[in-house]
Length: 255
Length: 318
View 1 (cartoon, rainbow over the protein chains, first blue to last red):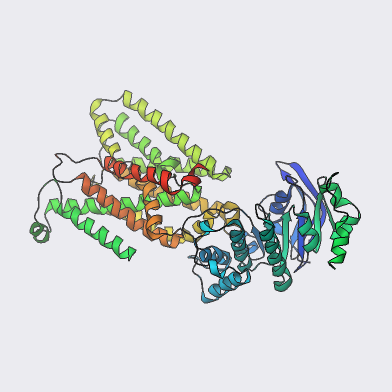
View 2: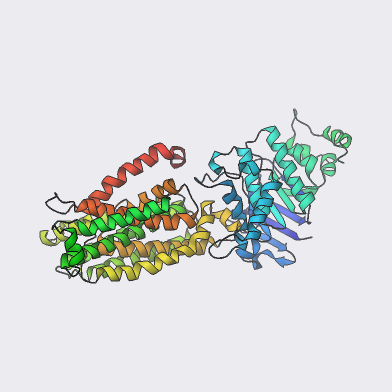
């Protein structure tokens, strides 16, 4: 276990939005923070990485309290990936990905040979070699998201918190992105926490689901949360039900 | 190639600034009579223009990155307003104050506003809020200066209005080296901010995730900008639009957003444009020197309108 949060409450201006009893992150696992829009997914992510203050509770990284780490120290252990394109003119994909090396470079941000190699490896892992020289403002949403993941990968953190990586993407791009994330966790041993409302992707890919159910986080496998009806309680209605999905997962040999 | 072009342009303009002025000097005069006092003044004036252009443009670049707002400039934070207010008080209400002391009042004024802004910056998390506070400070200062103008004698009012029009002409014998002493070390220091500035392009939270202490960076950026703007305003008056326009031109010329390219690029281009503005201001044929502010406005306003309309329509509106 490299990260855990106990008895936490998160929110704004002392107003609690969300509670979680015990969140735990193991190296190389793929977690889905699943919740409806506005349920507090981003708030929880931001609180877990220390950009936003938690109201109550303890967050620990490698056995030490999170707030004992400086920003510089944290940036080598935890990475926060946001999905919106900052829209910076005249910034190449390579330079954008290379920003991920910032925690390791000196005052003037000069890249060493090793840094260059790591940036190239990240670009290769995400399969965006063909975009290397392009400007990030010219990219499609899907291409840009891959660049954000490449940047996060070469930051070489144990944990990646990824906020809504598939917003505004079409179905093919969504599934490609989730597969790339899964690959980063399985092949490269990174722990990944994705905040999303893509229920089906979560059921297929997640090692563990953190489900936001009535302002509380419920934890379990896809199978457990389907069987106890929690997924349906949050995302289902008279037209939509995920109960049958369990059979599908079984036939796909996922559970 | 682009670097060489810019260096040649700035050198040419520097030489032209030495050769051209309201008093005619032939090229031989310039070469032979190095001690000629007119030549000395032209040399000082060119050095001041060069330093002022570089300093204001770095201020503009830093503000635009910090606020992620292409229309931010040194004057927007209210720092040149602070300097203007101090100068207005000194010139308009203290009667005949020596031109030599004037710069120190301006630096005091910008430093005072700097501290106000520092205090606010520590409490305010949103860059946009700070920008609005800066604008409001500027409006407040304008009102205060207007009030001072109403009650001041016409003689000192004329002096103040002339200062407000901007000029690179040396106010005193020591102006150019004092300016060099105050500006050059800070310009060198600005290179150490290039990494956090790059990170800030991505937004505050993203920068934090990359290990940047954004609060500290913001303070340093404000200190550097306030210092450079204050010094230049003190010696040259509030020079309009230069700091806002140059970073855009540099981005377009170098096709870059990375500060390792933009910082030296903006320094060079700012110096070049200030020299150009100064040259136009003292073109032979004009009976009197044209205030530099008029030239920088004529150069700057079309550039800014073009930026808004053509280049980044979507981004400024959103």
